[in-house]
Length: 318
Image (cartoon, rainbow, N blue to C red; front, side, top):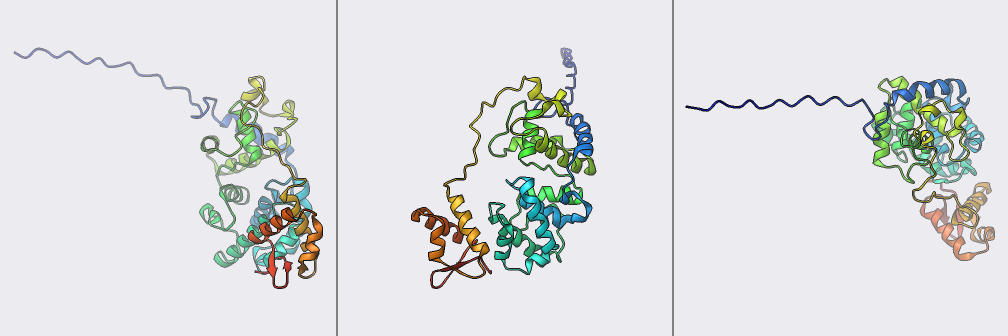
């Protein structure tokens, strides 16, 4: 005779956890969206690349120029650039050296070459129109994940996480509870940005612009104005008593006496020249010959300067 089986006890159901962002355990991002977007609607700066007439090309130009460069320095160069080259095809017709010349003193002039290369590719592959598809944007020369996401979001209102330095700092403080983000963007930051992204495309693009503006104007790297912040009451860093940064030292921006300064002086002379410049003239811009030669070699290697026969140099024509 078979012994009766003992019923297997059914475990009590596990209570559903409160909905949280999977990286931080804080309330979902939608609690941040409305106040930040409302603040942006009231306080956003009137910048030319945010106006409808800027179009996708104006947005793309601004994104190249604004990398590591403040708005105040970008504005005059941006206006001149768009007046001269209102469409990608207009820039593509010019030699790359003209892009370097027009870049002026914005710094990091390889961005000018990359923007010129992107304009050529847009003209050849997309009929002169900045593509709407994120993957096609990412396939353009000189465009990385950030720029592709920014153009798709700001120019076309699409839903993409846009992680610049300002946004990373806002998320580090408001959600992560730390003063500064890591020196380089991490996979965890990208995951968090995706988790916080609103589902609605229009709201997502507004959130991208609004969180960036909040970091630029209120949640700044130094002298942040928390009393004006629309999410101060929810900010994890504020609630923790604003603890000091205890991670790796922040990287400083040095310039005086560096190869960057020498490169800048060499390029400035070549930009102002109407024709090729002899080596002897370039030698006058910096007294230290080894550093000067290294800087000039670097400019040639980067494609920013073209060497010619007879010891002459010029901005690149091809």
